[in-house]
Length: 114
Image (cartoon, rainbow, N blue to C red; front, side, top):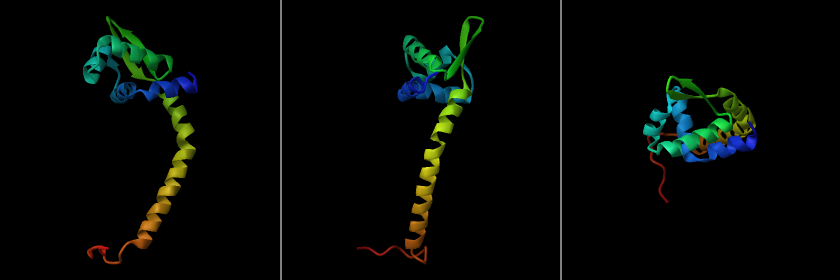
């Protein structure tokens, strides 16, 4: 899996919807087709991209192909995002403190109108 293929795979909203479905549990292709409202060939193309990016695994169950998330790439993505999450948390904490400083003393009292 390359970083570029991971980002490319997740850039498409249909593929993100498939990832969200598979977060709940592994699913056969037919269920994914039905849940996403895409054609079977289109769903298969999206699943191929996700598989090649390493985001999903497939196993054969009799005549069905069952797809499941592979947590390793998601963990890599989470690790990559960690410093940015810290940055956002600090920014949101600062915003919260600023809002607390400017909040009226009496929460029942409406804010003055301009």
